[in-house]
Length: 190
Image (cartoon, rainbow, N blue to C red; front, side, top):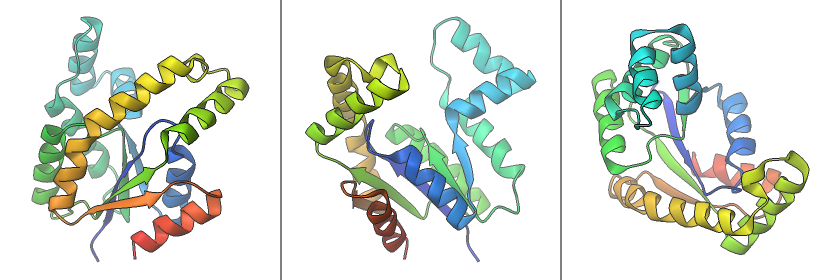
């Protein structure tokens, strides 16, 4: 049986965190968060972690090849996994192509790109509500929130096209109860 490899997308406030927790438990997936991977590799002082730390210390972005290497290591550490949920990666077409190339070698392609879609006004409301309770400063300023949403929209548009061309892009209505949205995600996965 092939693995269930999901790229979960959505703008800030779309509910990715909540929904990814459910998908991970329900489908027994391994969570691949590039932020978590970077921190773990740096803490372990692995070769990739040291390379990443050197770049980050200079204020530079970590090269795609290093991030792909970290993803490969995590996947190889979980060979028995039923699949993976990619969080925070890919963010560009080049990253999506590099991820596909790596997964092609393993014969474990991306199954679907699930994109939670929520109107901007609802996103702003959710983030301001979250900012009031979570203490996250980036969720308290409406101008900062709108900038984050705009940046997401601009950067992910090419990924929608990329995964649409492969027949893997699935837009999911991200408005409604958590349970309703979860049901939509499960239906999209078949």
